[in-house]
Length: 295
Image (tube, rainbow, N blue to C red):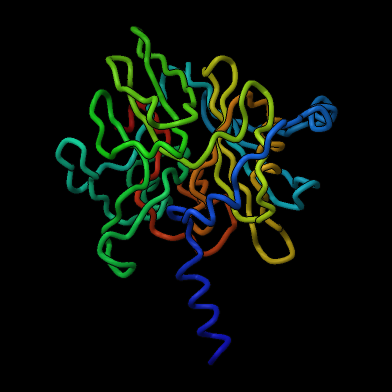
């Protein structure tokens, strides 16, 4: 019975939410970050990318450094027939407030919307307790020029903008306080911290290995990489922040942001759960891509 209760408590509290000040100190950046050693092996790394749909590629691989199974999706944001989608709040907040989202697994979000690929995004809270189906997100969320959840300045943000031809580009802001929506904004998602900037790893002190979800960008924002790192017993150990950065760098990313992890971490392709971490909790916010004619 004690073992059963221990397992239940672990499952209940293993999803990733807002970090306490002590936890934030544990993952704080170190000074004088260096990437010379990491950069040596990038050219030697080969990934077997397979097409999922036009403009969307997937690869699965085992990272020897972190001793983890990884899945990555690479999306060409110039692809004309894909559409970026996200969870929508069930109760929109007034100006400056926080919208309410219905709890939902990323898998269910993807299946409900016919998404080719989907991941979990922003950390979240339980405003009515863990048994409730209501969630609030801990960080910015915007659709077009409307902010539906306020900025969390200590965290970074993943921004999607469109040009006059509705071609998307992605960018990362180191602090959500710098985000101001404009006519080109399509979506803004909060995450945790920037972990890769200008092709250099931003070093963190934490050695905690967990399931991870992260997003990287390259080609001046025209290509997006979504990465999920598993943690499942002895098979896959999970990754630290720095190991996650290193993997994204090897995948070609120049900028990267850490999204929500732990039991929130999910990568879905064509309605199937690709990441193996268990359990997958009901999160507040997921985003993904669908074919435009499936809208």
